[in-house]
Length: 492
Image (cartoon, rainbow, N blue to C red; front, side, top):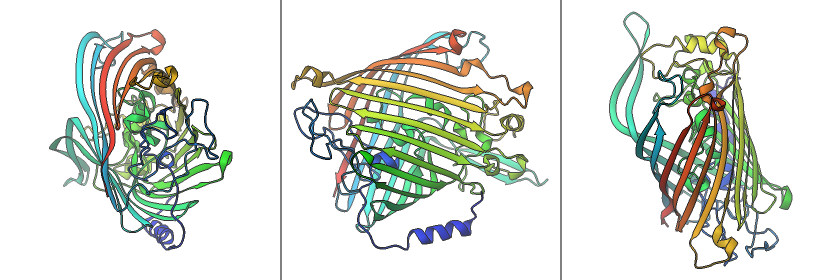
């Protein structure tokens, strides 16, 4: 399906003509930028660390809709009760950041000249994966501007341009411009209309999967983001477009939803190691919109402390969003489907997620991507899999609440299991490039501790062991230490 510029303008015009309606109680869990210190203090009927979402103003609480009290004494209420953006009057500024140091027993590249996989060598690393500044500004009670700017350390930033040479061929030009990376993660304008229907336009988080929908460091236990989803799809995934969202139902039949039309993935970036992850647009000043993507997410929040969601992504032809439209003469549709859940209790925090998807005509795409211009900013590693998969689960225990010691610090031991494979299934129509690389088949365990200092600060330690290719290749083990924060700095 194609949507041209005129059609998009027409949609925006309809979306922003309404001026009536009440302010919406949509939650951070639906808009994909959940910012909450997810823990309970049994000494209080309030949720410790309760804090509104940087983009939506939502506060992810779990106090009972009917005032019920759970066995530990924490009053519970399902998400979706508070009004959006009610945590400030006009303006607020906040952010989150992470710092990680890791000690590893494996080399940097399991694919480079070592038949046993990653070479065995000791190395240590330290990094600041990201620092994000977030702000909200109310033009009026109905119109709100939201933004997030992400700063990443490490690597090298380049500007990429695509130009025609004198002989009429397209050429890529890359110019070194900066160290690290600065990116607009969100920049959008929201029109609040009704609890069941609101409109957002601009650059937004694509809420596909658990980690994109809830990407702040308080929303996962490990020192780094869970590997599975982050290895297969963009993370954090943000695109430009139009979104409709809202909350409907009551008590056990309460739901949040979001639908989006955004710029689609670019098949130039699909590769062997990371499936569609590097297909996210953004390398140029303009994104292609010939073949937009359609995104939908639905979360059920009818049980206190539980959020269960599904999401779906569809782009009818990622090849139509290529840098040069003549590179492909075949359609490459992309379907991604996810299921995830989170349960928050005074004693236990548990999360689980599943992601799977398909790239149509992956064999033909592999042949084409393997021949991309050598100056193009893509890996050209093939074959691209027809299907990729990731599933994971983690559980943590709040020792302070279990033991009932108010003077204890909040320490949460946890365990996490993940399986992911960027080459789960090849395209059988191209038999000679359908053999999948077993070095991408990864199962892993993570064991660790979270020490929640309070005021949005957490210190993390974990040990990770990966089993590669079902044990055919060297295992990879590491110990890591990290510290992260997630807070509002200014609220007026």
